[in-house]
Image 1 (spheres, rainbow, N blue to C red):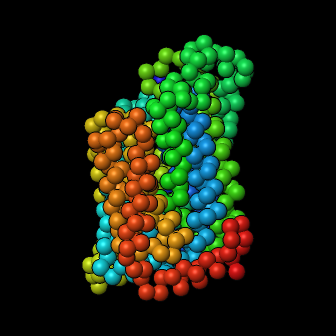
Image 2 (cartoon, rainbow, N blue to C red; image 1 turned 180 degrees about the vertical axis):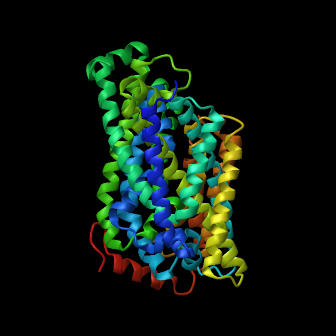
Image 3 (cartoon, helix red, strand yellow; image 1 turned 135 degrees about the horizontal axis):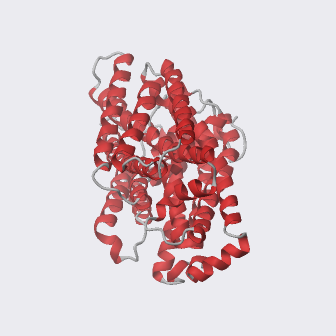
Length: 496
């Protein structure tokens, strides 16, 4: 499809807004805290949208709509997992984590872990940085892949040129504006995503003849598309698939790129106010994506690549101006995740290794400049990974999502079990991450293709708990644990 002037006009207007946000955010990115957590001043509505858009990415817009197209009702298990995961993250994790990180003056997750467990040898910090950097590179590469697909589908560029354009835009405003630009661009992108994923399934279902007609057509195409357990039914493979889809959402409880949002909040009260917004966004995002894919299966039943159904529907069902907006939403989903991961990976190198381990006698401004340089280098690495081959976004993202989620068992134990020890935390990270990678490379095909996050979580929890039972808690950690929970109080109540 050739690009129309209208679509390009909408795209250019959106990119100009991002450039302005980047320039505006850059005024506070001159030091480490400003560049990586916006000086911990973000209001509730910003962190709410930023958390959801970061967690969803192109996986939502292109990947999950493609899964709705490919497997139909079976994809609804993703909704259950994501809504539960997002809700529990805000209700249980966010406030005690915020209280801890404020006490430690932490600006990264490794900062928190090192202080929580009194890790003077920096073992947790270095291990965390290695995991974050490696998984972020895969994750960002998936987003660059998505940008290539989006530009190719909407305006007819080559895949390679689309990937380069997307990477260049993300790198500019992330490098210049830091985390403040990232968070406020996420707000804009989140609002656009909610609007389009509310409208697209309504228009798609209407075009398919209404709900009843769509269900009938899906049944005619393949009755399995309407079965909750999909084509495998209640079998080992079907149960493993459903469990894997549910497990996707539980990474919200401890993935570093999401925990940074809680660190950057203005206060624990901001977190309380943001929770409802975030949960409602998750519901609209996931239901809208899957229903759009199901409607698309009726309207365009013979697609070679299910992950192109979103751009195809937006081009065929809407006038050019709206098609431009739908292109912007794809880019919004991509950018809202890629920018956050760039900042996260940069902080792992500059804050967690260079500043805290090697401790050079540099000014805060110098560290900030290094952070921006590392951001650019990582973006170029991700682009190089994405250019040679168009990968399947859904599964590519899930691997990186699982790798980063290996922090979740350690984070949950550190927040809710006073007996967690330094040795237990180290063992949990190593076991969780190692199991995730081993599962993908060797074991997955022998266990009904069970999603790697499930065994990764299981081994992470087992290792953390067992090793902690045989080792001593850090001096003062139990007293601090009680002080934090007394301050925060029970879920749904405001902090004292």
